[in-house]
Length: 354
Image 1 (spheres, helix red, strand yellow):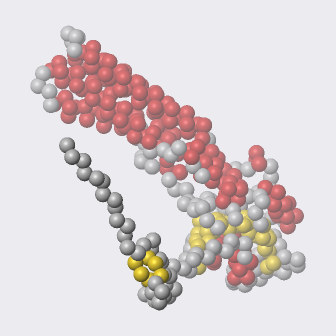
Image 2 (cartoon, one colour):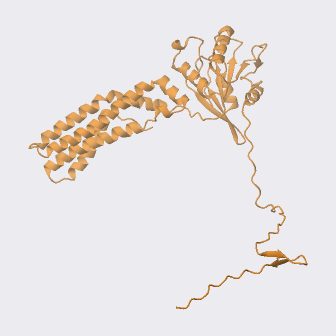
Image 3 (cartoon, helix red, strand yellow):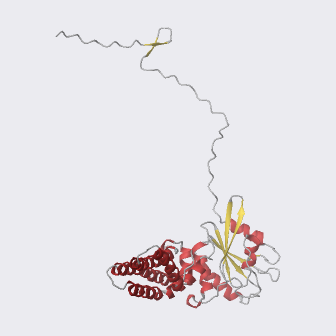
């Protein structure tokens, strides 16, 4: 996605482009006409380039579409793009209209100044939209690349060990700290196993509170869980060093189970600090039990279909039994040999004398 310029940047670039066009004309009146037309066309082209730099949100995957809606609001983005489209259409139209009027005008210089003021006013009307779209661009271009493949989403309360787990089992290297909300955005990692790959998504901590009270980071986590998860690893902290009692952690677990239809694997972390009965345990601090948890998660990965192996071109061809084909003119003689039938002679037409 290209950088979205401000109104002043668009006008400055358009005026410089139009000035080059103006120098190509020897006639002063025609030069003023060409300047007005070139400014309108340059502003139009730049604004259209801005619009085309944004994707069609209705055609995006559910994950990216929901992320854009959470962060900025898709309707608001569409309104700003619509305002830019309005300005693109009218700046070119106004530029052409005033350029035609200048052909019959006595003072083309004053007409050119009026045209420049009108075009600049139209562009400045959408300056807030341009600034907003540039902010959208700066955030959306840094969203993680979430592929359409087998995905393990790591969920749970803040500081329960989600980032530590994904760092041990995947290529991602999130920053881990000992305070809540260490993960400020969605982190994606991958684990290669031969030709097959497993995708891990580390979500921010989500609090056990109503949806309308959750902040943007928490909503991002829910979006990832709902849209990209093939299986969910929900991590508990029975030591409660994360700052949340087990009661509220289990309440959030039940809420997550009610939101998805994919398997939810529950694991108690920090087994080096406290033992949790009734749960699969692990310790992301020293790695105890991490491999076993990963193996259980991978059991939910669909088995790839076996492809039929192509025949080796160097292997000998299978022997084929020869079949004797008797043509329509062949016959069998008295000694059993094939004898060709004589071809029938064509009857000649009688000659007619004239």
